[in-house]
Figure 1 (cartoon, rainbow, N blue to C red):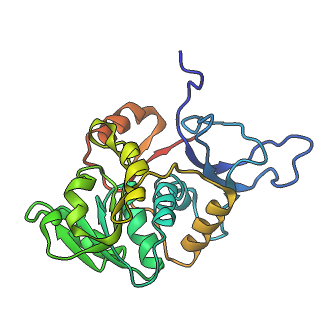
Figure 2 (figure 1 turned 30 degrees about the vertical axis):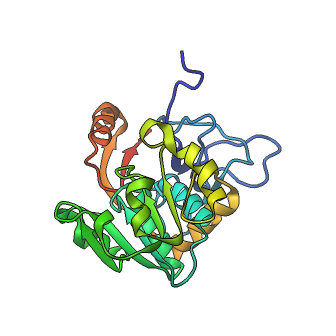
Length: 260
C-alpha cells in the first residue's frame, strides 16, 4: 500500500488547531501552501509542521484565489531560474495553457522578457490575456520550423524534444522540458550538452522554499500572476475530476472544493 494514502499537494484553508509551541500561525488564520512530501490535501483536515511551506492569505483574497498559486508556478519558477531568463530575452513556451505553462507565461513576462506562447486555436485569446506577446497556433504551424531563434525554449507539455528545437535555439540557447523525454533522454542530455559549449538542455530538480511561496504571493497581490482556473469539483467528485485532468484537455488548474 502507498505510504501516504491521501493525495493532494497544494492547499488553502483555515487553521483549526495548533500545537502548544506554535508561534508562526494561530487558530483562524487563512493559509495556502504546498506539501509534496506527505501530501494530504484531498481531505477535510490535514496536519503540517509549523515550518511547512505555506503563508497566510492577503485580506482581500479567497481560498479559490490562492489554492492554485503554488504547484504549477513552482515548476515554472524553478525552470525559469535555471535558464537565467533576463529582460529582453526571447522565450518560447510550448503548452502555454497548462498549469505550468500558463504560470510560466506570466512569470517570464514579469521579468520583462519577450514571450512567444504555443497553444491551440481556442485558447489564443486566453494566452494573450495572461501576457504573451505573440501566440503560435500549433494546429496550423509547427513552431520548430520557424525562421527565428530563442534564448530559452520551455516545453511545458513534453510535446517536442531538444533535437527538434535545436534549430530555433540561439547559439547559447537553453531547452528545458518538464519530463524525462522520449526514452528518458533528458537527464542524459543534461549531463552531456553543457560540456559542448553551445546549445544545451537543462534538467533542474524542482524545489519549493518559503521564499518561493512569499514571492508568488507578492506577484499575486500586485496582479502579476494569477493561476488560470478551468473547473471546480467537490471532494465527492474527485474521481471525475481526476479523469478530466488525465484526459489532457484541461486548461490551467482544476480545483477540489472541500466543505466540512
